[in-house]
Each structure stands twice: as structure tokens, then as C-alpha cells.
Image (cartoon, rainbow, N blue to C red):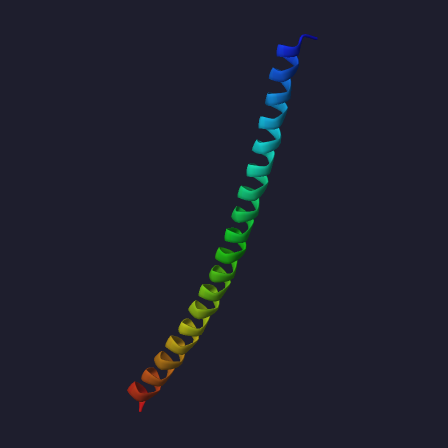
Length: 68
């Protein structure tokens, strides 16, 4: 293998190593973001359940007031 071809191949391997490192960092960032929005989604679902429960309670009291 000629010196030029070897250097070219070596540069390509280095580029691939850099690309893999970049992709690993990006993947970690994406996973952290996913965890964040999953937690936010869980909190929003709980808030929605709480609001629904409170609204149902208000409706029951309004119906009771209407019937008396």
C-alpha cells in the first residue's frame, strides 16, 4: 500500500471515529431530552387527572344544589 493511500485511509478512519463520538454525544443528549419530556408528560397526565377529578366533584355539587 502506498504512503498516500495509507494516509488517506488513516484520515478516513479518524473521521469515522470522530463521527462516532459526535453521534454518541448526540444520542446521549436525545436520550436526556426524551427522559425530560417523558417526565413532563407523566406530570401533565397527573395534572389532567386531578383537574378532571375536581371538575367532576364540582359537577356533583352543582347537581346536588340543583336538586334541592
